[in-house]
Length: 190
Image 1 (cartoon, helix red, strand yellow):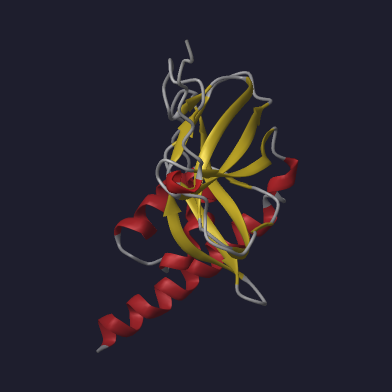
Image 2 (tube, one colour):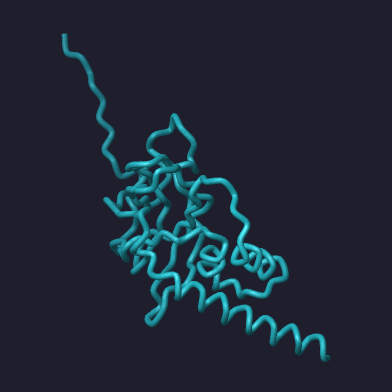
């Protein structure tokens, strides 16, 4: 009983420290790496909705994006809705390494509704620097001391700031499918 109580107290203190560190490091908007929604389109072959985004990497090193998440505004806060897939339009290079400058990529989006926003953890490809923040983040993550909804705080502690798009909506109605396009056949008249 005493050990469980100590773990709960330690978990509460760890979460409070993590939130304090994240809040004290400033807003994500000041990051030299930004994402912008360019357009929303339907993928007729798969029947899914895709967002076309631009990642503007203002750092002097490439950035690794290991996952993509879609958050939904539930009225008073943003909550994780689902994992997304990202695909660079430049298919000749790595799908998770984004060089300096601007890169266009697509991400899967929900079919309708919103408001949504895309959230990406960014990790500059620089030599590993061991810090107390990273050690604490790995310890808290390994021992499940941070709740699942604190993923952005964990990323920030690990040195992977979250890139967050501006909120957007996907129009109501069913997505366009391949069957919706007219079939045109060409015949030759002699």
